[in-house]
Length: 150
Image (cartoon, rainbow, N blue to C red; front, side, top):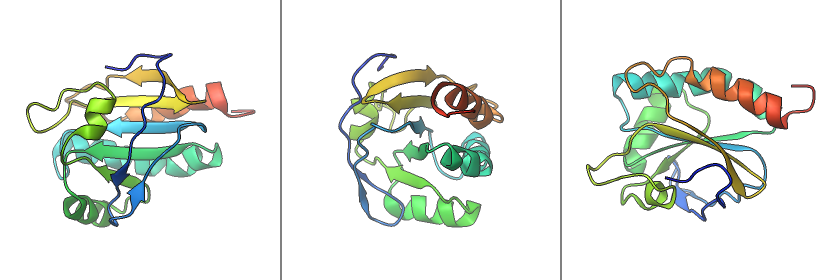
Protein backbone atom coordinates (compact mmCIF):
# COMPACT_ATOMS: atom_id res chain seq x y z
CA UNK A 1 0.00 0.00 0.00
CA UNK A 2 1.22 3.49 -0.79
CA UNK A 3 2.51 5.37 2.24
CA UNK A 4 2.86 9.10 2.89
CA UNK A 5 5.68 10.56 0.80
CA UNK A 6 5.16 8.13 -2.08
CA UNK A 7 4.64 9.63 -5.54
CA UNK A 8 0.98 9.85 -6.55
CA UNK A 9 0.07 7.12 -9.02
CA UNK A 10 -1.09 7.88 -12.53
CA UNK A 11 -4.68 6.70 -12.80
CA UNK A 12 -7.56 6.95 -15.20
CA UNK A 13 -11.09 5.59 -14.73
CA UNK A 14 -14.65 6.31 -15.76
CA UNK A 15 -16.97 8.12 -13.37
CA UNK A 16 -20.66 7.34 -12.87
CA UNK A 17 -21.48 9.26 -16.08
CA UNK A 18 -19.06 7.23 -18.22
CA UNK A 19 -16.62 10.16 -18.48
CA UNK A 20 -12.92 9.37 -18.22
CA UNK A 21 -11.28 11.04 -15.22
CA UNK A 22 -7.49 11.33 -14.86
CA UNK A 23 -6.61 13.29 -11.70
CA UNK A 24 -3.13 14.83 -11.57
CA UNK A 25 -3.03 15.09 -7.74
CA UNK A 26 -1.27 18.46 -7.77
CA UNK A 27 -4.09 20.11 -5.81
CA UNK A 28 -5.38 18.57 -2.56
CA UNK A 29 -7.41 15.49 -3.40
CA UNK A 30 -9.17 12.84 -1.32
CA UNK A 31 -9.48 9.37 -2.83
CA UNK A 32 -11.49 7.00 -0.69
CA UNK A 33 -11.78 3.32 -1.56
CA UNK A 34 -14.79 1.37 -0.36
CA UNK A 35 -15.87 -2.25 -0.83
CA UNK A 36 -19.22 -2.00 -2.61
CA UNK A 37 -22.11 0.29 -3.59
CA UNK A 38 -25.44 -0.12 -1.76
CA UNK A 39 -23.99 -1.77 1.36
CA UNK A 40 -24.45 -0.42 4.88
CA UNK A 41 -21.01 0.94 5.76
CA UNK A 42 -20.30 2.11 2.23
CA UNK A 43 -23.57 4.03 2.08
CA UNK A 44 -22.82 5.68 5.43
CA UNK A 45 -19.37 6.69 4.21
CA UNK A 46 -20.69 8.03 0.87
CA UNK A 47 -23.36 10.09 2.64
CA UNK A 48 -20.73 11.39 5.07
CA UNK A 49 -18.49 12.63 2.25
CA UNK A 50 -21.53 14.16 0.50
CA UNK A 51 -22.56 15.96 3.69
CA UNK A 52 -19.10 17.54 3.97
CA UNK A 53 -18.59 18.08 0.23
CA UNK A 54 -19.30 21.86 0.35
CA UNK A 55 -16.53 22.33 2.92
CA UNK A 56 -14.10 20.20 0.89
CA UNK A 57 -14.89 22.23 -2.22
CA UNK A 58 -14.60 25.56 -0.37
CA UNK A 59 -11.05 24.51 0.49
CA UNK A 60 -10.25 23.54 -3.10
CA UNK A 61 -10.20 19.82 -2.27
CA UNK A 62 -11.53 17.30 -4.81
CA UNK A 63 -13.17 14.11 -3.54
CA UNK A 64 -13.32 10.78 -5.40
CA UNK A 65 -14.95 7.56 -4.25
CA UNK A 66 -13.59 4.35 -5.79
CA UNK A 67 -14.86 0.78 -5.76
CA UNK A 68 -14.74 -2.18 -8.10
CA UNK A 69 -18.38 -1.64 -9.08
CA UNK A 70 -19.09 -0.76 -12.71
CA UNK A 71 -20.23 2.56 -14.18
CA UNK A 72 -23.93 1.61 -14.23
CA UNK A 73 -23.92 0.57 -10.57
CA UNK A 74 -22.09 3.77 -9.59
CA UNK A 75 -24.64 5.79 -11.56
CA UNK A 76 -27.54 4.15 -9.69
CA UNK A 77 -25.82 4.55 -6.33
CA UNK A 78 -24.92 8.21 -6.91
CA UNK A 79 -28.44 8.96 -8.11
CA UNK A 80 -30.11 7.21 -5.17
CA UNK A 81 -27.84 8.86 -2.59
CA UNK A 82 -27.63 12.30 -4.25
CA UNK A 83 -23.84 12.14 -4.53
CA UNK A 84 -22.35 15.15 -6.30
CA UNK A 85 -18.74 13.95 -6.48
CA UNK A 86 -17.20 11.45 -8.88
CA UNK A 87 -17.41 7.74 -8.15
CA UNK A 88 -14.68 6.03 -10.16
CA UNK A 89 -15.46 2.60 -11.58
CA UNK A 90 -12.51 0.29 -11.00
CA UNK A 91 -14.01 -2.97 -12.26
CA UNK A 92 -10.63 -4.48 -13.15
CA UNK A 93 -8.92 -3.22 -9.97
CA UNK A 94 -6.20 -1.21 -11.74
CA UNK A 95 -6.83 1.96 -9.71
CA UNK A 96 -6.80 0.06 -6.41
CA UNK A 97 -3.65 -1.79 -7.43
CA UNK A 98 -1.97 1.53 -8.35
CA UNK A 99 -2.53 2.52 -4.71
CA UNK A 100 -1.19 -0.83 -3.55
CA UNK A 101 -4.53 -2.25 -2.40
CA UNK A 102 -5.47 -5.92 -2.60
CA UNK A 103 -8.18 -6.73 -5.14
CA UNK A 104 -7.98 -10.52 -5.03
CA UNK A 105 -11.44 -10.86 -3.46
CA UNK A 106 -13.14 -8.77 -6.13
CA UNK A 107 -13.37 -5.75 -3.83
CA UNK A 108 -11.01 -3.50 -1.92
CA UNK A 109 -10.62 -2.71 1.74
CA UNK A 110 -11.82 0.65 3.00
CA UNK A 111 -8.87 3.08 2.72
CA UNK A 112 -8.62 6.82 2.20
CA UNK A 113 -5.70 8.67 0.68
CA UNK A 114 -5.04 12.39 0.75
CA UNK A 115 -2.79 13.52 -2.09
CA UNK A 116 -1.32 16.90 -3.03
CA UNK A 117 1.75 18.22 -4.80
CA UNK A 118 1.99 14.94 -6.73
CA UNK A 119 2.44 12.74 -3.67
CA UNK A 120 0.57 10.83 -1.00
CA UNK A 121 0.21 13.03 2.08
CA UNK A 122 -1.92 10.86 4.42
CA UNK A 123 -3.47 7.40 4.54
CA UNK A 124 -6.52 6.50 6.65
CA UNK A 125 -7.88 3.12 7.64
CA UNK A 126 -11.43 3.93 8.72
CA UNK A 127 -13.24 1.49 10.97
CA UNK A 128 -14.77 -1.11 8.67
CA UNK A 129 -17.87 -1.59 10.79
CA UNK A 130 -18.68 2.08 11.42
CA UNK A 131 -17.21 4.58 8.95
CA UNK A 132 -19.52 7.36 10.19
CA UNK A 133 -17.56 10.51 10.97
CA UNK A 134 -14.64 9.50 8.77
CA UNK A 135 -15.18 12.27 6.20
CA UNK A 136 -15.30 14.88 8.95
CA UNK A 137 -11.97 13.67 10.36
CA UNK A 138 -10.37 13.80 6.91
CA UNK A 139 -11.84 17.26 6.30
CA UNK A 140 -10.45 18.55 9.60
CA UNK A 141 -6.97 17.25 8.76
CA UNK A 142 -7.05 18.57 5.18
CA UNK A 143 -8.23 21.98 6.36
CA UNK A 144 -5.42 22.19 8.90
CA UNK A 145 -2.82 21.19 6.32
CA UNK A 146 -3.92 22.78 3.03
CA UNK A 147 -6.57 25.44 3.50
CA UNK A 148 -5.54 29.00 4.40
CA UNK A 149 -7.33 30.01 7.56
CA UNK A 150 -8.79 26.46 7.80
